Structures are given as C-alpha cells and as structure tokens.
Picture 1 (cartoon, helix red, strand yellow):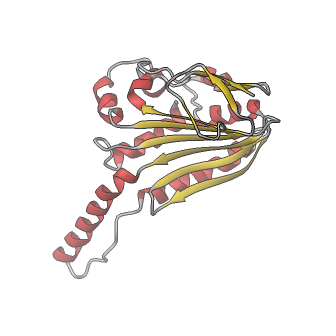
Picture 2 (cartoon, rainbow, N blue to C red):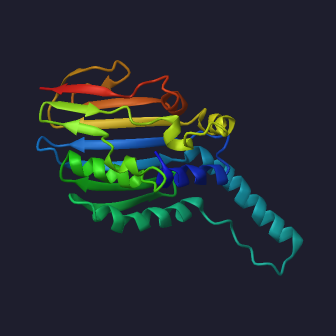
Length: 234
C-alpha cells in the first residue's frame, strides 16, 4: 500500500474522515483455471453525514451573506475520486491479462473503487502492484499478493505500516488517529469448495466456497493481526 493507494487514503483525511470510520474492501472471484475478477473498493459511507452537513452549511452561508452569490454546493468528493480511478484504466489495462476495467462510483452508498478481470494470478499480482506502485518503492513492483495452483490458494500478509507511512515513524500519532476505526475486508469466492485454511481469523460461507476476513486496519498495519492464509481447495 504505497503512493497510489496513499492518495486515496489522503482524500479521506482531506474530506473530514480523520476521526471517521472507512473500510477498504478487496473482492476476488477465482475460477478453476486461475482467471477471475477483482475489485478494490473504499466504503466511505461514514463520511456522508459529514459531507452533507458541510454542504448544507455552505449553502446556508452563501444564502445569508449575499443573494447575488451563486448557490453552489461543495463538490462531491466521490466524483473527485472517480476522476482518479478513471485515469487508472489505461495503465491497468496495459498490464498483460487485465481487461474489462470499470470505475465503481456509488454516490448513494458512498462507495468508490474499481473492478476488472484478470487472466491468471500473475496478472492479478501485477495489477495490484500498479495500484500500490510508488517510484519511492520500486521493489514493490515485483511483490506477490496471492498464489494459486488449482488446489492451493494463498493470501500473503502484504500490508504493513511502513507500506503506508514509509520507514519513518514521525507520523505515528496521525496514522493511528486515521486508521484506528478503519477496517479491511477481504472476500474470496472459488468454484471449488474450501477444504481447509491455515488462518482461524477467516470465516467460510455455508456453501463452503467463499472465504471472508474483516478486521481492524490498524491491527493489520502494526502486525497485530496476520492476514496471511493458506487455503486448500477440494
């Protein structure tokens, strides 16, 4: 989680989310041949009341100070973020095996992000590295996030505090405030049923085909929770 992802989180700070809850969601649907679909979403629904309050205040202030002023609402933060996600399409679809990129922008539920198809796990890993890429951390371009070989699926423990804030600890207090109520959710759905998992923090759906994790983002960043998991499929 480096420069590209940091500007997304940075928007949360700018838009008043410093003391609010937001959720980062990763969703994977994996077929037996290793292809599938992936989505990266940010649930900012907890920010909506703050934005509405700010917009209403701005409207009231404009009306009361001058009737000659045009009553303009504050720009919708999701539409500002949508521009950033739209700009990623060309870069991500240039990755071999990535296609069908779409920006997700739900202004009712306040969910923003992207979804796309991948040809194999290698393509998925490369695409995630693009999302998390940074010229300050070039080694991230070769990072592995998931592995798959027909009966074995692995989720790598790939999120740390250094990935988000860098090696310096000077912003520890700010980072703690921002992420203390933030959550990370991962959902993986397979065509085959799940036989076993190595990490007890994950839950398996009733039909045995979906793996689910949800936990504190701060606990993951500080390595209190390990999100790595070895999954055996039937």
